[in-house]
Image (tube, rainbow, N blue to C red; front, side, top):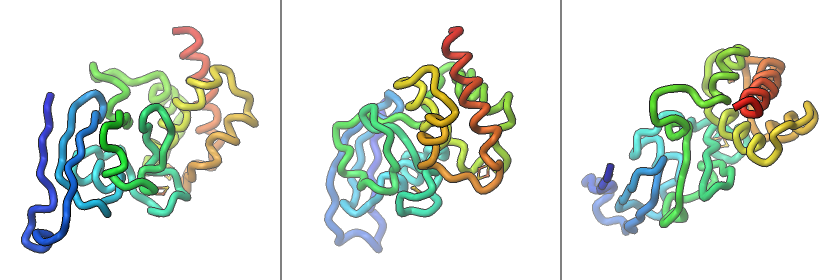
Length: 173
Ligand code: FES
Ligand code: FES
């Protein structure tokens, strides 16, 4: 699928400079003509319509906007979209292409590791990154990895248990 979009064409923005970017988002090619000041989080959520990218603090603290850029875990509110020209981006929407849940999503569901769900996308992306590097993390390693994500609802216990369940699922796959 090829997505081509032209942003920044409103009357209000017509005199501002733009830059063309081309990147892969969840294995789909995206090109866009955007303002250099546009944050990656705003671009993905508002222009590419990826609602899993949550915008919370907008200054790199809460982790709600966490995604993968070229395999690295990134807080997308801390990057400009133009910095990802030529990159490969993965969000929660890209975890499954057949409608089934990824093992980490399954584990969060089974362990009731969410309440309002606002933080969940970021936790899932952080958990996947952890388990790719360390398939059998200790509780301390889980706590350390997830310290960059904030949840205001759950008290974290069920999230930690979901990470351990996800590790077991991935080991048995
Ligand atoms: S919105 Fe990006 S870290 Fe909070
Ligand atoms: S489930 Fe509500 S912020 Fe985490």
